[in-house]
Image (cartoon, rainbow, N blue to C red):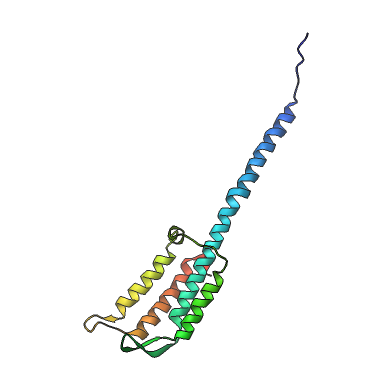
Amino acid sequence: MAEELIKIPKIAIYVGVIAVVVTFIASYFMFSYLPSQQKTSDLEEYKSALYESTLCQYSCPLTSQVFQNKTRMLPESACVESCASSFREKQKNGKSFTNQDLLGDSLVSDIENVVNTCRTDSTDFAKLETNDTKFFDCVSSGLTGLKGNYTYLN
C-alpha cells in the first residue's frame, strides 16, 4: 500500500493562522478590554458625582446655626441634604468601588488636602476658633480649582 499524502495548500494554512489570531484579538477585546474600559468609565462617573456633591455641599449658603453649643455660620442643612441625596440617587446602580479603586488617581487626596489646608488657613489657633465664612469660601474655591486637573470632571 502506498501512503497517500494529503497536501494542504499554503493559503489554507495562512487563513487558519489569521483566523486564530483574529479570534484571539476579538476574545481579548470582548472579555478583557471592554470590561476594563467600562469599569474605568463607571469609576470616573462615581468620582465626578462625589466631587460635584462635595463642591455643592461646601457651596451652600451659610446660615447662623447652633452647633456644639456655639452659634456658627454653617451651610443650610436643607441644601447639604439635597447635595448628598443627589449623590446617593446617582449611586443607586449598585456599583461599588474599593478604596484602592478610588485612590487610583489623586482626586480624593486632593479634596482632602483642600479641606485640610482651608481649615488650617481659617483657624485662629490662639482662640481655637475657625472663621466659618472664610473656611467654606476657601474650600469652594479650592475645589473649583481642582476641576481643571481631572478631565472627567469637565
